[in-house]
Image (cartoon, rainbow, N blue to C red):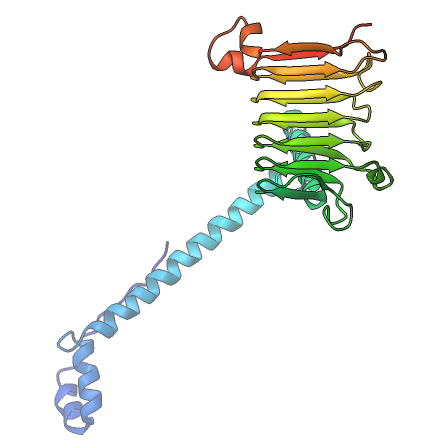
Length: 275
């Protein structure tokens, strides 16, 4: 950093008296400041300004040097400067694209969901597409107690995507309709009775107790699978084609598991029909 030299020039011996005699009072005050006998705030402000300008100039020169160095090394171009950098950029781009797609799907699913929740002692409620489901195709039954719901076969034409049942106690659900995913999810429920009246290929029951899945005639085939984890007293029945009693199995995941504690609650089992 280069600063200009300041020279203090001596005044001639004859000049002060004549200048002081003729100069107005303002000029005398300025002269006194120059000699360091008056208010020096203006003097220091001037030096602060000079210092700020010098620092700004140095920063500008350093930035220019950095740009020139980056240009010489090819770092100022939007291109990888090594094979590792190229692979890293490709991975980051793939992750951004995957995140964008996931967020888009999540937003679409949330927009398609209808929540029927917080109801108590409401029996035999038949869910209609436009009024009850608000023309949405993902159904969430949540936080309901002692209620009964019917999903009628008239919903088939509206292509219901999926049904979730969560945190419901003492409820019954009659499933007459077809689902695009053919998937019913149950979680955190107690004393839930689901009558499956249309073939549903996948049912999952997690962290629930005393759930009864009643598959009506011809709905439990070799392709149906019931996945369950952390559930107790899961009862699965299948209505036989004759006059005999229904096929039945009761599962307790904690008894089936050879693990302990939280690991036992997370271990998953599958129940399916073998003809």
